[in-house]
Length: 422
Image 1 (cartoon, rainbow, N blue to C red):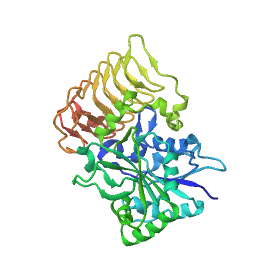
Image 2: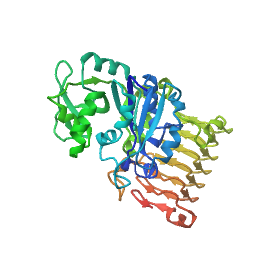
Image 3: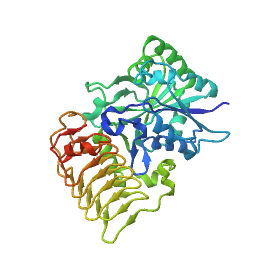
Image 4: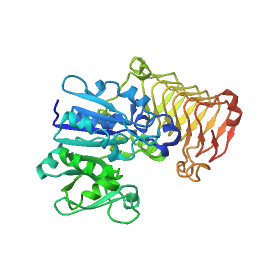
């Protein structure tokens, strides 16, 4: 079978800066925007771009991601002329170190590309929130005769150090590329979206990976400068790397206001609703006296209290007199009567008891005592399957671990700002 274009989605990331919510699932499998997963955005873009053959490169805790992908039918990637194939590591010795970099991940799966013999290969990350039709980028790549085309966008100068950045000439040729540097080289950021001419990709991977150079941004792209033609393709829409708890929470809040550029309805994002039988859940229901404002409430939710500026995944319950503000609540969480939940992220199956005070909407300063670089935005996070006992008072920038059972509940009665329970 031959394909004109093949997409490879890098979906093996561990997402360590997402801490608890990515501890037991691959980062692209993290729920987002109520009923979606992060990888849904990339796969919807692939579908919209009419790319019919996709390889998803998995690694870290791939089970929930693989269950979500299924056979690819949710994104029209099944049938005689389409396919979605999960590609786990074939080399490596340690569970978290099978793929030694982004280029190595592709290098280990060259057989997949050789079988399809594409003209061009689109390489994507599975953990970004954006909407993009790749066809104009592919067309420009071919018109210019480039070996590599890199999607780029301007970012604030104070954030440029977080990205690979590049300088270009008047014709859009990349003349300098620096990976994540504190030098003020440029604010034109690499989005991690690449179109490679197939033969050029094979040759560059053979040149780099056997020599221990395993990363596109750090090794392959800088090594191509002066030898290959690299051009940039400018993007100006909404794009966010949700790699931190703060950026994840902020992106969910962006989904509540389409003026931010994140418009879930207009983007027509596809997802697989088979998980937890979401497809069979009834529409969301509001009891008499309930109030919901500026919120995203998914199917199967039951609201008796008040929900303001929040994102609720399927099956969430909010009890009478409870109040949920500026929060992200994943599947089947339960908020007890009279509880107040403000500026929090609750993973699946969390139970919050009656009259609990969890998080603070006005909290901004300080940081978490154990993970100061992960939590400093005033957000409190509770791991999957944990129960918060009735009457507990829990502050801001708090991390509470996963599946904390009843015998540990006494530790959750009062947790100050920046505290941890694991």
